[in-house]
Image (cartoon, rainbow, N blue to C red; front, top):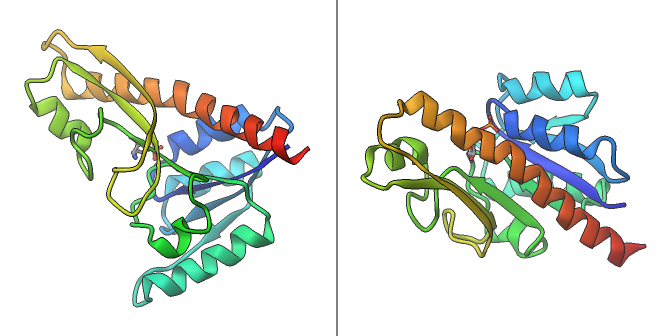
Length: 191
Ligand code: GRF
């Protein structure tokens, strides 16, 4: 078995999709880490019976918050961290000890449209092929080594809402799958 932590800031639909996929396996979702007390992700964690930690960045140095996060991670002996709509930049302090142990999902085909509002920006483009990227996290914004990309071809008549739905459907299908594969690999090494 291997231990997962999920970081989310908002809605938490990816958090829930991953958690539901992991719960019946031998792996564990140790906790949700959230920086927003009003996040729907917290409600989802409560319903799923998954513990959560709330961190507050306001008025705090990023390094101090990451120190707190490092303590949670080592206390729970976390093997893998999945960022799922975590709207905070993560620094070297966290990345260095967890290199290739932190992954992220991005709702566009990187290296195109990194950063925020990626769905809107790819929708507004002339690109016919849209999709998602799952990648390792490095110190840049959405620049780390790519693990998996999945895409679809649009005909151009879709509304933004329809495109969003298609993107989220891909996310909810493939992000949990990648997480389980990585946990399986980590678990084999540990056992
Ligand atoms: C997803 O579109 C993900 O790709 C991006 O943030 C969004 C989070 O959605 N990084 P949710 O909170 O999982 O519903």
